Every structure is written in C-alpha cells, then in structure tokens.
Image 1: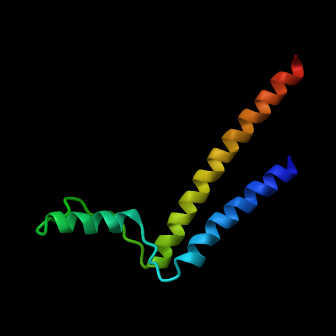
Image 2: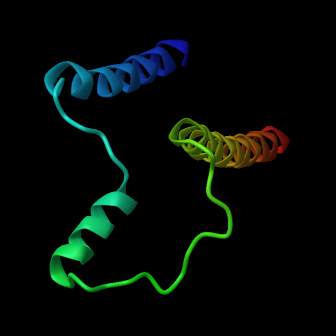
Length: 95
C-alpha cells in the first residue's frame, strides 16, 4: 500500500513539474480570463451584467484564496473517501 501511494505521489509531482519544464515561456492563466477574452472577441461591445461583490486587493491574494479553496475542497473529498473506506472496512470486519 505504501509503495502504491508513493508511486501515485511521484506521478502527481511529475505531472506538476512537466509543464513547468517544457512550457517555460507559457503564461498560466485562469479560465475566467480566457472566457473574458473569448467573449470580447465575439462581442466587442459586451459589458458584464454582474460584478464581483468583493475584489481581492492583489493578484497574489486572489491566488492564495483560490488555492485555499482547492485545499478545503480536497480535504472534504479526502475525508469523505477515508470515512467511506473506514466504514467499508469496519463492515467487512464484522462479517
């Protein structure tokens, strides 16, 4: 089990590093920016009908909040998977 998890972790690290190595001049942006650019290409006079309630003071804080959101989501999913696995193991131990 440890070996399998170690291989999965190694795979994740490789997947994270490969784009950085092979796409050194690439700009990594979010889907929101790409969508806004595509919309303004299609409709030049487009004006958004909604604006954000709160804008983060800088791009770094926006990135931090985005990462924090991802971490919280991963923790919830990981907890749920661990809980279900423990429940499954406990049920099989009874039989």
